[in-house]
Image 1 (tube, rainbow, N blue to C red):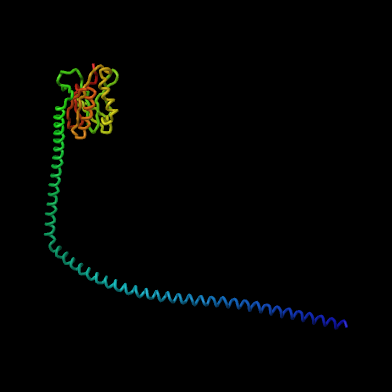
Image 2 (image 1 turned 180 degrees about the vertical axis):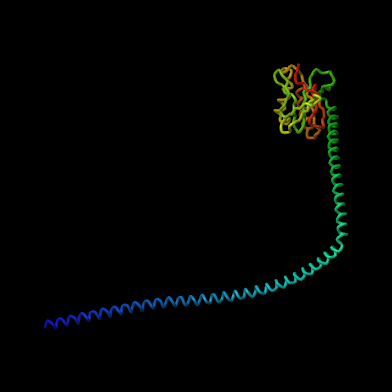
Length: 304
C-alpha cells in the first residue's frame, strides 16, 4: 500500500508541473500576441506617416520642377539679352580698335597737338596766377583806401561836434602829457599803467621791442587788452586817467592810435564819448600798420 501512495504523489507532481508549464506557455503566448499587436499598430502608423511624407515630397518635387522650368525660361531670356549686349559690345570694341589704329597712324600729329595744348594751358595758368595776384593787390589797396577814407570822414564828423579837444602834442600849448592808447582788434591797449607815485610801461597784451635807432616797436595781442564795451573795465581805466593828478601829480590827455579797421570806429566812438563825459581831453591819430613805431619821447615812462 505504501508503494501505491508513492506512485500517486509522483503523478500529481507531474500533473502540477505540466499544468504550470502549459500556463506559462499560454501567458507567454498572450504577451507575445499583445506585443505583436502593438508593434503592428506602430508599424501601421509609421506606414501611414510615410505615405503622407511621400505625398508631400512628391508635391514639393513637382513644385521644384515647375520653379526650375520657370527659372530656365527666365535664364534663357537673360542669356538672349546678354548675347545681344555682347554682340553690341563686340561691335563697339571693333570700332574703338579702328579708331585707335587711326590715332596710332597719326600719333606724331596728335603728340604735337597735345604739346601745343599743354603749352597753351600753362600760359593760361600763368596768366590766371598773375591776374589773381593783381586782384589781391587791388583789393588790398582798395581796402587801405577805404579805411583812409573812413578815417577822413570820421575826422570831418568829429570836427563838427562840440567836443573838447587838446592841441596836438607837437604844439606846446598844453601842460598835459599824452597817454598813448592803441585801439585795434576791437580792444584798447594803454601803453602805460598809472600806480600810486609811478608811471610804468604796460606789458599786458603788448610786446615791446626797441629798434636800432632807439625807437619803440609795439605789437598787440588780439586775445588780450581792455574791452571798451565792458563798461566796468572802461570806467576803471578812465577813472585812473582822471585821478592821475592825485596818483602821480600829472595831468594826461588820451592820445588814441586808431588802427584802420571799420570795426574799431565804434570802439573809438565809445572811448571818446565816455572820455568827454568825464571831462577828459583826447587826441586821435589814424594808423594803417601794426606793430606801431614810436619815438622814445612819445612814451612818458617817468613823470617828473
